[in-house]
Image 1: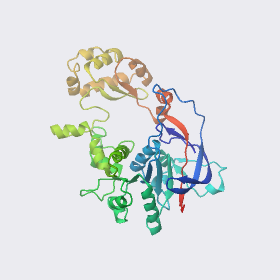
Image 2: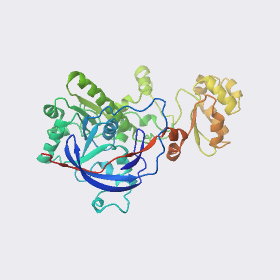
Image 3: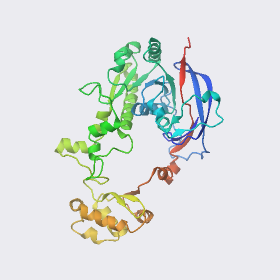
Image 4: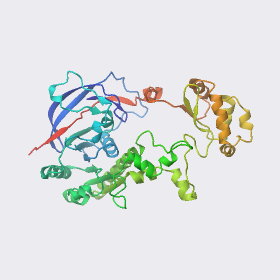
Length: 418
């Protein structure tokens, strides 16, 4: 199918679709393909890049068995697929990956689609966002026949990625030790909420819960408001990135040792690691964190400010930048010479007063006025864009952050190739 994708490619705007079917050979045997095509608009020639053409797919020939669903695991396996790996995604028999039904929005089917496609559910934008370049099958884990299919796939796979609750697959005879006996070179990556050990090992992991439990919500939101979640499932995505990196490292390790490994990746520790300098402040100095909205606890001004018709982010990170900001943007040179604002320490101490002065000044004009005035002065700034404005940003257009590619999706049914 033709999809408009981010580059590297999150599915964004699929339009019309039709469907075709055929047998397809794969590293795992014969698969029955139901391929859905999406019609999209014309694509401009690719922009010239200074570093020349890309490399050949580095993971070509690597076979990945994907037992994950929702976001963290599918993100990891999608990135591996983007690098050329052959990914077979195993889904639940009756409904598939949970995110297939997280709709609207969906990728619509054109009225002229063949009757063979009529039973297929619409594909959600959420599912398409993290499952490109994969082929899907459904397998019933609860039957001996289904387990035997999985064991055959494991024997032929280089990597298995799963995000079941810790111990669940082991109870079915598909734990790491079981799979290691089938394939000693298998890289077995487990993505869970809290890891394979500890008192929470059997608890399910949800991004929004982990955001609260591992400190992120505590530091997100306005100072006088309630804790807030991040606008996207950042902990899930970060966990997928960590898992992707660990799998890449394991593939290199296997080249050196000839042995597979068990990767223990989880949302809880990923989010703790993501606290970065906030965690370091506590571990080194015992300093508890608090919420600052868009502001920085140690730099002023460094936050979002309202304009007459929108918002703009301004970050004067040092005294020189603040002086330029006061003199050439606000046209208030006296601020840079005022002892209350002349140094960053003083500006932090007098944050409320200075922010009120800046707010009052910026509210006198539209956002575009301030963006033009800030341009070229060396003071960090940027508009607060909605999603449409983000994709229409001239840099996004110039870099072609969205591309159209041929892809196939929906379900594949496993056939016995003998």
